[in-house]
Length: 110
Length: 138
Image 1 (cartoon, rainbow over the protein chains, first blue to last red):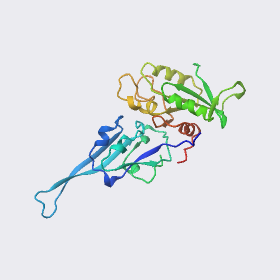
Image 2 (cartoon, rainbow over the protein chains, first blue to last red; image 1 turned 90 degrees about the horizontal axis):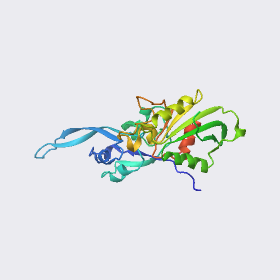
Image 3 (cartoon, rainbow over the protein chains, first blue to last red; image 1 turned 135 degrees about the vertical axis):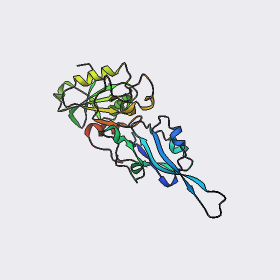
Image 4 (cartoon, rainbow over the protein chains, first blue to last red; image 1 turned 30 degrees about the vertical axis):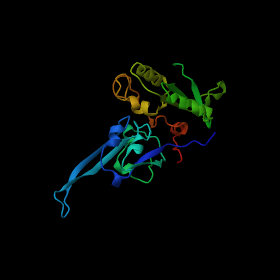
């Protein structure tokens, strides 16, 4: 029997995320949610100010997540990736909801 | 006590493990048995030091009272593990009218959960980690 492979977790590369919501829409269990706002960017010489999305928060509810990886596959900007994960379990249901601070680390401590 | 198949933790037979096999997560419990982490209880095992109940699968509205009954009949101090996404939150069926959004969902027949094990399904070693309280190495 081969050695068991622990689940990985899905990490967010915050700088790459454009808040496009594709992951949120395509997740089969609706376990991803994000908050963003728009900011106007004026560049010298531009005919009009441009608008960019700025990510405020990004949450994955690991209590719902099926670890299917559809979000990782579909992200057009490679802002989500698999990383080895140390912890699985939680004593509180809310502890399974990882916000942007917990999704952005090198490895998750659970 | 309602008849459920009692298991023992192979590494520590003082830990008695009961599985409520409600859906496919029960196969992961079986897998832990096949891998040797859990084994069937025998008459020689004696009184358990610790009891762990696994809610392994989807808790539907008709089954919720049964889950409640098994948990109520368990010895005091029994730890209840929500094993997998369904028992934790309803999993992929969380918005289905007949599925309770987790074994601990508020309302009738919700049971208090001590440890939530995410995953659809969680691997057997996550099960052992939840029973022993030790996290899995990366």
